[in-house]
Length: 352
Ligand SMILES: [Zn+2]
Image (tube, rainbow, N blue to C red):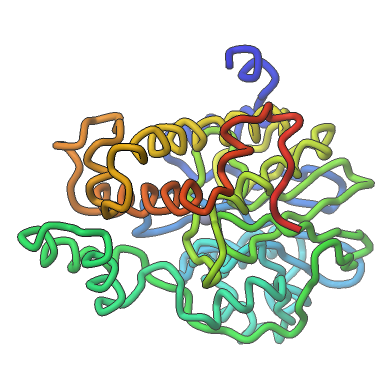
């Protein structure tokens, strides 16, 4: 893995330094007229998310407007004013996925600009399906029972269900299909379906600029969570592995992610993230002969955790149970076989 690590390199020391210190980086012009704008996330667990602004002759266009907060909107006002532009000039808001740190500011910006909202058709289904982050208490109680969580812990964990505020349902003006192209401010973007983090996540490739906007699909250091807004009947883990494998062909591009810092080494980083998840898949699979149809709780209790199972509580415990269920489902469906066995380079993406 040290070999892979050496192929992953930050392309902005300023962004990397700011992230490391928990600060919001200065906006950077990544290509002529294409800006990476770090946006504050007051009250959230992370310091910032990236919006990407296209400042051309045909108005202002933004990918991922950011967190639902006045401070985030004010940050856009200042950024645009400093470049002789205004919020009222925003024509398009495009999103990689519907989490509140990417879509959250959309409503306020649309109110003030009349911008059209564009997202993938699949992500519109995720938003409309009610399976989003921060599932309601009833759903949470049902999950805890299904997982086989001991009764003494259920009340405490049921209260953890609203740790992330869900995005409000919001209607899109245009829906994108996989591989569909869209023109923004004189540039052409291609949407590439990358389900896993959410069911309708997309990455946007700007071929002529040699960049790809990866949202939360691939980040330089953080291993993105999986299935945080999955479509019913889908397998977020298998979808995610396929979506990571699909990144290899964009390896020559500079990566503009949703958090942290821009970097090169997309194929190596995708492989690293896949290996991280597959270690857990293998650990769960190794327990199947002994535990069989046992509930998720028993698998989780026997799985390796960095701080040990006894240290798992609250949100960490829920997140661990969610992960365990995703891996167990993938193993039980048989779909994980090829990924666990195969070489990364020859493994076949399992989604269309
Ligand atoms: Zn995010």
